[in-house]
Image (cartoon, rainbow, N blue to C red; front, side, top):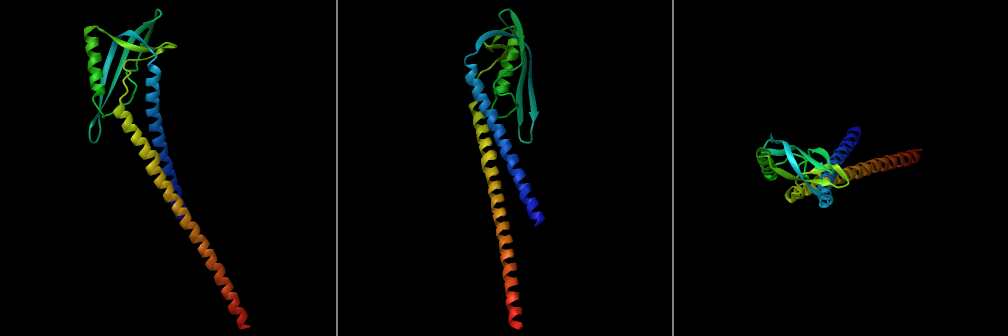
Length: 193
C-alpha cells in the first residue's frame, strides 16, 4: 500500500515536471512574439559590429547554432553597446538563421559597414539587430509546449486519478468485506449459543 502511494506521488511529480516544462517553453515562445510586436515601434539606429561568433553545438542527431555579437551604437550623443542579436536567444537546429545572420554580421565587420540596430526609444540601452520572427521555431515551440504541458502531463494526471480511484475502491471493498465478515461471524456465533 505504501509502495502504491509512493508510486502515485512519483507520477504526480513527473506530471508536474512535464507541465512545468511545457509552460516554460510556451512562455518563451509567447515572449518572442510579444517582443517582436513591441520592437515594431523601436527606432532604427546605425551600429558598428565589434565582434561576432557563431557557436556550434553538437547533439545526438544534429548540430545546433547560435549567433553572438557585440555592437556599438549612439543615441542622443550617448554610446551604448548591445549584445542581443535576434528575438530568439537560444541555440537550435530548426533552420539556418544563425548561420545566415552570423555571415551578414561578419561581412559588415570585415568591410567596416554599419548594420541597423533597433533601439527602444524609451530605454536606449535595449536593442537588437534582427526583428525577424522565426515562425517555424515558434510553431515548433508551441507544439512542444502543448505536448509536454498537456498530453503527457494530463495523461499522467489521468493515470494518477485512475490509480487513486482504484486504491479508494480497493480500500472501500476491503472495509466492506471486513464489515461483512464481522457481521457474518457474529451471526454464526449467535446461532451457536
